[in-house]
Length: 218
Image 1: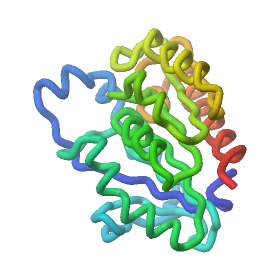
Image 2: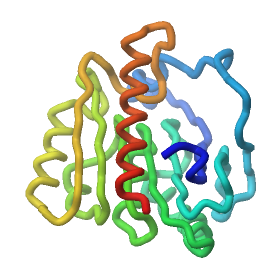
Image 3: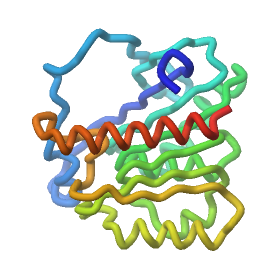
């Protein structure tokens, strides 16, 4: 499922950095995006989405499927508050007849998890999530994929395995959990573009996410 088949909205958040934030999320800041690698812009930035959200939007507007990606930066709102504030955006998309998937990176992983507890979406993917707890797995309603990292100091592999165990006990939703080896937090979106292994791992994570959406986003 590529951009030609689905409408993609990449939400952005205000980047607020404090001393505590830098310490806790140092792995998020290790590899800022390399702007020099930008290709031809396929979409546009929309500033006035319902709920006051700003997003980079690409893909066919008439598609019956939409994927909302929550970025790995962290703004002034908590993830729970952001999910509540996003209700108008998801209502807007659903009123246009779209089935919705949500992908979340880091901070966005918790946002995506909160959305998975609602009836507003159909499928969710978490890539190296932050702030997600085991009890969250007891409340999600939709097929969920979790992509963790072996060297993640924010959500370490032991915690990801606990997510797996909690989901296994439920037996009422589809799930998939994978821990990528030799990579750290941020590997799916903030990686060293000069490191072939890092690039390959990020590409694999993207492929897993697309396959999951393709399978469950109808």
